[in-house]
Length: 173
Image 1 (tube, rainbow, N blue to C red):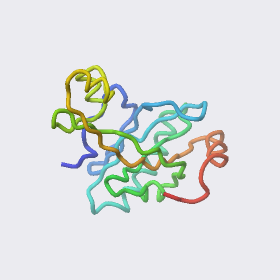
Image 2 (image 1 turned 90 degrees about the vertical axis):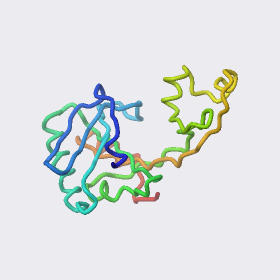
Image 3 (image 1 turned 135 degrees about the vertical axis):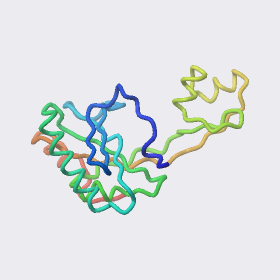
């Protein structure tokens, strides 16, 4: 099982493209961004390990189709998972632009000996605050995760202009 094929909230999914072996899923953003136009997140990109070159070609085709299918979407946002050893090579090969690295953050907690994602803790206990969980009698430790590199793919002139003004000139992860 590949961790990239894990659950995704079906209410977030806006579009998915599949060619029999390769899969890309685009979803509504989970946060707001620094621009004032429509954006979407690349939520899943998967292909067998030996398909790296055709994965970037497939992603490029999916982006072109997305632009036609959803003309109001102006920017695609994607994250490379540094914890899994990903550097964003597929995104760069597909003409994404490096924007920034998100700050390190606490993503997982060990609550009473069980590794739990912060969102899961919030769902189960009504909070992901370490202090509040301890007040409730739980033994809590935290795990920090490296911030993920963020890549952008502008679909319109307005988004390209914003990207040129706000993104790193080279990949500096």
